[in-house]
Length: 263
Image 1: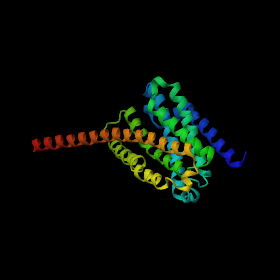
Image 2: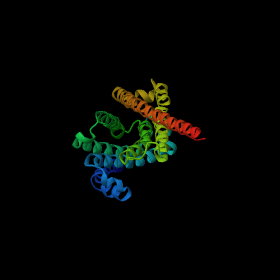
Image 3: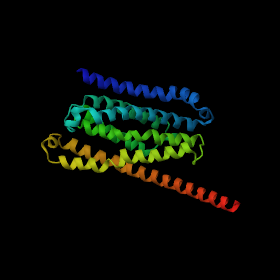
Image 4: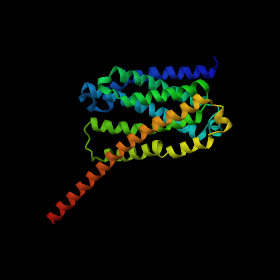
C-alpha cells in the first residue's frame, strides 16, 4: 500500500470519527458556551442543531480546500479527467467520512432529522466519489462538485436564527438570507451550464473514452441527480427570499402611511 493510499484512508477514518465526536460531544459544549439560547431548545432541536454545526464545519473545511484546488492545483487544472488527484482524493476522503457519519446520524435519529432527499444526496455523492478514490480519475470534476458545499454554512445559519427565534426582519437574518441565496445560486446553479458544457466538449475524446462506460454513465447520472435536487432547493430558497422581501416592503409601506397620517 503506497503512501498516498494510506493518507487517503487515514483522512477518511479521521474525518468520520472527528465528525462523530463533534456531533455527540463538542457541539453540545461549544454551542452552550457560544449561544445561551441553545440550552432552552428541546431535545429534537438540539439534535438538529448539532447536526447542522457538524455540517457547517465540514462545509468550511472541504469548501476552503476545494477552492484552493480549483484555483491552484496545476495537475487537475491541466487535465480535469486524468490529472493526478492526490490532493483532491484527500479532500474527497474527508467529505466521504462526513457523509458516512451523517448517514448514520440521520438513520439513528430518523424520527427527528430523517430526510429522504438527504439520503439520496449522500448516497449519490458517495457513489460518485468512489470512482475518484478508487480509480484516480475525474479529480477536477469531483472537486468542482465539492464547491457546492460553500453554500451550506449560510443555509445552516438561517436555521440557527429560526431556532433561536430571531425576528425574520432582523438585520442579521436578512443579510444572511441574501448571502445564502446569492452563494447558493453561484455554486450550485450558475455552475450548471459551464459544467455540462465541459462534458459536451469532451464527449468522444480519447481521454473521455478511456474512462470506460461505467464511469462515463456514473459521472453524468450522479451529477444530474444532484443538480435536480439543487434546482429544487434553489426554487424553495428563492420563494422564501421573495416572500421576505415582499413582507419587508409591506412593512415599509405601512410605516410610510402611518408617518403620513401623523403629519
